[in-house]
Image (cartoon, rainbow, N blue to C red; front, side, top):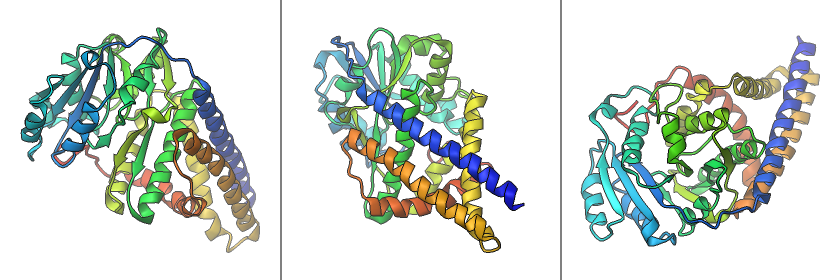
Length: 376
């Protein structure tokens, strides 16, 4: 058994290192792309909201302060059947600025049973009313900088159809810092894959695409396979309708402030992990499966190492290797996005990372997920 275990650990560990370092090269390639269009197209910012009364003031402030041409931007906010004062507060905040418009998601969104169906239907309602060729998405709990819309729109040269923007998490305390590093790792990997021409992930908190590409794809499909903007990105890439880029520019960096407690973090990561089965490419699933095998073997290695010192030695060696390749990728991402990097917090997060990845993947297969309460 030991030879087989060590062989699988070796092969999966080598692939993991190759995957992370390749993503780092892709991220650096994306950062080196300084080409920007001088054109300023009309931009429609679309935001889905569900019980966001406590976040609306900050969101609207960030949108209102955008330094994009005043007459070339609009803000469409869609209420997805909130049960708090979201709609009332929104109507009060919007009265001072005609660029803001409020819509309600269709009644059928309430009954959606997929992970993202309700949110996707709310976004689709906003897009239906959008006047811009460039659609820019963020979440209601996010804080976009004044340069956000301008920087994202500048990525849309004629051959570009989809742009993924940078997102960082902010949360107080040690666990908040661990959570932020974990999200930075997800972002760095996703950005790197886009830089390599192999997009996997997008983020609803910061994404932009052409309305013409959205319509060509038939809009969002509201099912397990093509339910939101991430899978629109896959469609655009696979059909060759335009380039998919990552905006590796700190001026486009959107901040999302999240709780520092474990429960909301766990619930969010479960929701993300539950969507892996929806990736349209079998190659992506093989890659993710190989990486998951590495994590599974690394988690088992210290226990099996009590019976065989060779396994424990291999675990130590690959843990050090993982530290090196992960820190290299995260340092690059931190530098590009203007984020700080603490090695001590990073080290603690690496200890947390192994069991968290293994168990969140398992639980995501058996626990039903919701976007917000009341919407599966």
